[in-house]
Length: 81
Ligand SMILES: [Zn+2]
Image (cartoon, rainbow, N blue to C red):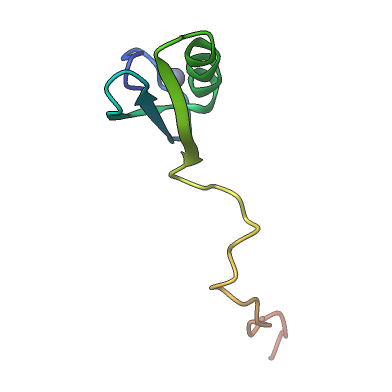
C-alpha cells in the first residue's frame, strides 16, 4: 500500500527514507515498487529532498528462506493391501 497513492493496491511494501536538506529532518514514506521508483525519480529532481534509504519491508524473495530446511517427507504412495 502506498502513502500517497491511496487507490494503489500493488503488492510489496517499500520503505523510503527521505531527508530534507534544509531542515535535516527525515521523512519516512511507504510505497509499492512501482511508485517507489516514481517517488525516487521525483526526489532526485527535487533540490530539497534527498534519498537516504530505500528498502523492501515485505521481502517475498525465496532466497533468504533458510529457516525451513527441505526434508524428505514421508510419502504414503505405497499401496498396501
Ligand atoms: Zn503504489
